[in-house]
Amino acid sequence: MKKLNIKKISIYLSFLLVSMLVFTACSNKDNADGPTIAVSWSTDEVDKDSKDKVDIDTQMYADALRKAGAKVVFLNEMKSLEQAKEEIKDVQGVVITGGDDLNPALYNEEPIPTLEDINPRRDESDVFLLKALLEEDKPTLATCRGMQLTNVLSGGTLYQDIMVQHPTDIIHRDPEKKVFVKHEINVFPDNILAEGFGKAGNVEVNSWHHQAVKDLGKNLEVLAEAPDGTIEAIRRTDKKYFLGLQFHPEAMIMEDNNKDALNLYKTFIAKAQELSKETK
Image (cartoon, rainbow, N blue to C red):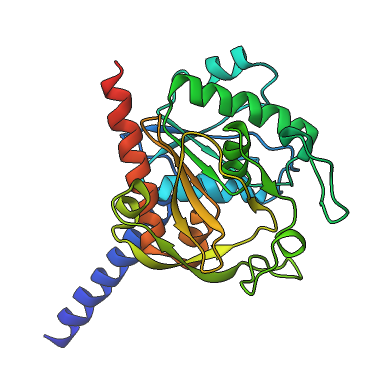
């Protein structure tokens, strides 16, 4: 009798191990039934360990989207508005990634001494892409730099360096640029961010930025703020779903296993799928 139980236990453990391996393998693949979400182009070098032959940051966006149930495609560098419209035509939504500082010439300012690296190719590509997304009213989640550019294209401006132009006790970026810092934000009720998180009020998020929205652009609504008043989330009020986030939910999902951030991605993906069906 004991031998039989040991045999059963051995079979069960083997089955459990195989199931876990299959689940892990499947979690790194596209969801066959999920909507297609595109990730914006970046000029960063390809990481040698990347499954998708992209840079390490872009890989994290792709992994988070897949974990939330989407199929993922990677957009090319945009050279024109027409190309951008063509590339987003068959996707259900787009995630704009973070990256270098934006050129202050985009909002008619001269650079200050503490402006960091800018990326003219990325600026041009993302401007074409965001303009196409706005014109086509495509569901969009614009992260960090993407949110800042959304504000600029909406007629707003940026703090080129928060600590120089708007000193605060809140640490928005690790001074050594090694890890995400954490702080709370106040998510206002009854908006698409609160819906995504499944709650309003105080929510802890990660942070990696030294630039932020200064003057808010037109057709934008603030959805969340840090305790120092830094704008942490916005939406375009004239679009069906256009959400800008100063923080990085993709890292919260993949590094912290944060359920609120995962729910936010799942909500975005579901909304993108729903809206794409309405337009057909």
